[in-house]
Image (cartoon, rainbow, N blue to C red; front, side, top):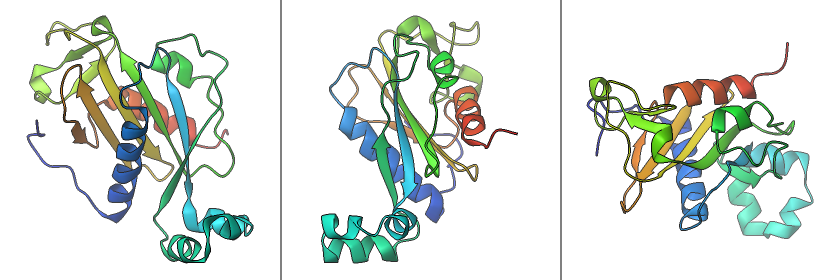
Length: 188
């Protein structure tokens, strides 16, 4: 499936898309009863702040990481305080991003009653929450992997139960993406 209008894939978006797909592959094949959270750190900044990482990575890998200002490193966070919640919006309220996080990623499965396809936005737009009158409910779980950077860059990968491919785009889950972006902003 593709979006009716293509999402822009500039360099920061491409870096986030690569991180989202890496996490999607990491959790592939595992049922996700509760959301899993991944902080995204800028690899070059992380290496500058933690020079001891160079020894762990090796000289060649450290040089590549130091030279790529857009490379994102994913770090899985410990269980959240609301780990029993299958509702990603509820669980998102309890996530505490580490100081070094330049962004974050959510991976979870939405049960069929938690999602629908909005026909007015095309076949690739999914809505978490109750099945709406505008779409048809899912027939199986929907795997979602949603990422956002503090600067507002977003990317999502959605996979319907039984599908081999992901539907990709920047605004596939607008409500969840907006909430994820808001959680990454410093508290005022």
